Length: 233
Image (cartoon, rainbow, N blue to C red; front, side, top):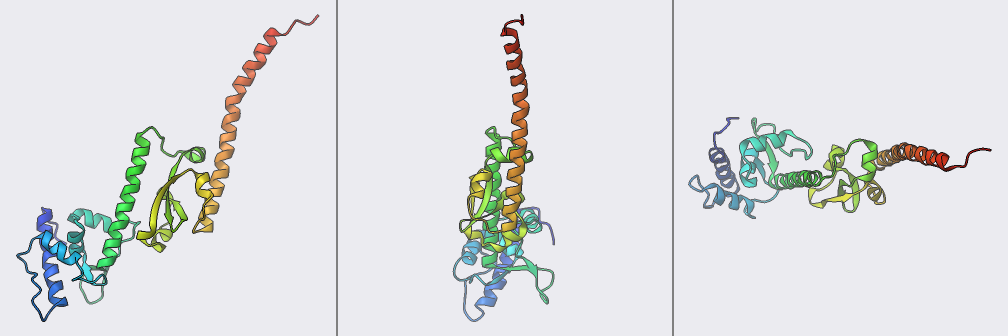
């Protein structure tokens, strides 16, 4: 794929694809889409009901629709989660295709992921420490992905398979401690058991930490008691 110097230059590719798309969808009537239309006008037409949700579009047209630059679009399609819906289709060359609805849901999933990262950064910036070890997990509030009331997992450690099984529009982010999350229903029993084990291990570490803190205090109390005790006769 040719890398364009500007986003506007890249969008010219999407505009050509949009014209070809409308020529295919409406071959027998004037549809008013041509190469003289700008990116905003094309975006509005593709986003409208004139293009059904199950219509296949190429990645360049999807990037125009979603207002993504070329490099951003390429980088996102390489990362997962959320998994990219764009796939090559036999007989259609090297272009990657997805339906319009798939592209929009994928974009929504990216907004969810980026929103979760922003929340995490704000929490850390406010003085909350990054999660370090099982003991810290017990005390700190974490970001959990939830679908229809079921906990899927921690945003930073979420199995891709659980993310792929859920519809993006059904996903939400909640800030809970591990204990609060474990009191809610979970989609995967194995994932919940993993966090039960982490929670139990964290509490064992906390108990050990409290004992270590208590030992000097206990020794100091014993020393003061010895100092004030009457001497043996």
